[in-house]
Image (cartoon, rainbow, N blue to C red; front, side, top):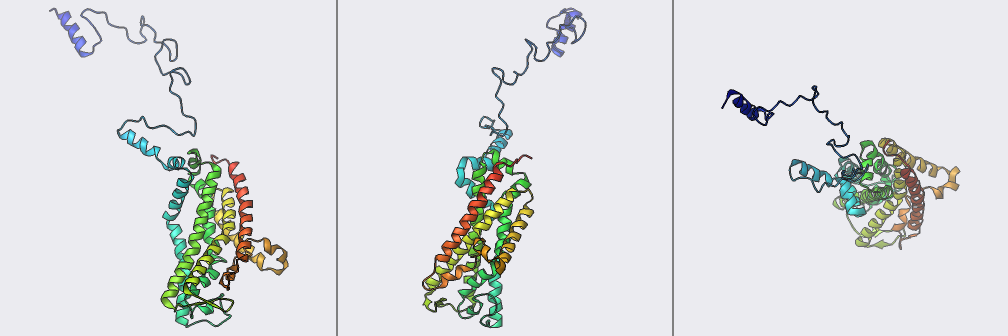
Length: 364
């Protein structure tokens, strides 16, 4: 084999640029005599099909869910499948009940929620310890039913509700309701909840239901802790009603639960107001403060005799009328009247929240 043939074979082995010994070298790209390379997108040029052309893969619409079922089983596939079962996707697949359950779990996983419930639990504990240490309270002094605690520990929960309703309960409800939409907007998660899609009205309904659940949890915390600490520090016996008759301990416990339900219903109107205010801003602290301040201002208006004509229309007007449930037999008229007032506030401010939220630009 000649030296020129050897050089040709070595060239083939080294670079593969010459296919046979003595083959002429291929001109470099762009050199004189080299064939021009077709421009990107020109006829005959290789390349990706244009968007929308036959055979081109469809591009997902903006905000649509991406199908990740075809991803490989490697690292990218695992990450893709984890993304495909993210919180919004689970909510979309599971429906309203799954969305509600998810939001309730999120609410009670927060330390803030337990801190507020713990603060509410301290109210009956402090009342019971103060009465135990002091030896009792004089009739007519302090909150209602305070003088009954030393004789029957079941009144600790009732007295604690009287103390908590004007400020502490509205403050905690304002935090939860005011944070419902504004908190998601401030964290940047609101748009993802709607992309899933959760649906704006459905999301509002679920957020309000979560606030209502917290209303029940807050009221029951005061009642249950008050009953337990009263049972531990004071004698327990038949309950003397406001009518002068006595009922059994079991009947008294049922009335305590009814009082807790009464307080829960009383807070539903305030929750609707807080939800509406939460749709008005992306700053949750502002909605929380506005809700709590409005509750206090409404109570002040209810205490002014000059505004007596307005009192029946205030959502706080019947907050303390649960004492009618301690009569014999229980008077349910105040419960019904209170529920109707709260229902009116729910309808009005719920409609305002829907109007505001359905016209709100969550991407801005």
